[in-house]
Amino acid sequence: MTSLTPSDFPMRRDTYLQALQTKVHGDARVRAAWVEGSLGRGTADRYSDIDLHLSLEDADVADFTANAQSWLSAIHPLVLYTSMFDGHMLNALTDHGIRVDVWPHAGHTVTLDPNRIVILHQQHGAVTSDDQPERLDAAAQGQRVLTLLREFWRCVTLLPAVIGRSESLVAFSGLAVELGLVTELLVADAGAQRDRGVKHLNAYLREQDRAFLETVLRVPELSAPTLVTAHLGLVQVVRERGPTVTERLGVTYPRDLETAALRYVGAELIQLGIDIERLLDAHV
View: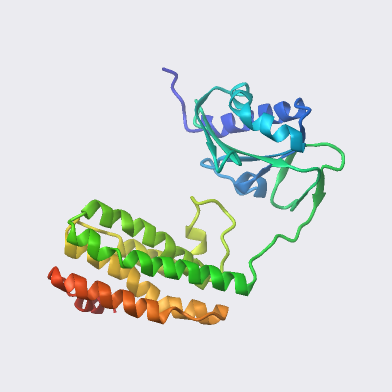
């Protein structure tokens, strides 16, 4: 077995990108090829993957997508290939651990922010520039926050079912779902919009918020009281910060939903010998 040193991997990704550039140059179907994500922005580290976008003639998209696995394998052997989102994204992993997402696009001309991409190939007129990236306006942000708040309280109402059935693993998994919703709420509260991949979060959270969430999620055992306490730690975050965020964005916090969810959850958990009022007070 070949021994790899840590310094080998960035070199192999650079080598792969060079081979990828040669590949798109030689494919007449490709009108333009560019890299987005951290590589496109110039903020890549050793863990960054390759987000490759291809502009193709309308008639070529289906053919490319159908044969993308062999197209990628010709650059370097693959150990994983998955067509995702009805073929709109093609996910691959090489035998050297290089992660590649390929996004085929139909159309003649694409408009791109030159500060957020690296162009590997373009035919004349295939790419135009726009350095004003789209951002959600306050109304859109407000509706997005309302959507995640409603989903959070819906998830909370499932807590009695999983605790009552002694489904400790499901209750623990539910924490991850709720955590995702709460972190997005706190990102919005910090006035940030995430423009990096799902593996980047620290830069968008206030340090004290990140530290608090990490404390809440230190679950020493999967007992009912411990799991409920962790869920209620996230509940307390939403109760405190949700109204602040929605007021700033000009939308109404779903107070009736919060009240109904906590009334139901509290009554059900009391039947199981768990007093959520006492546990909530412990987070104040």
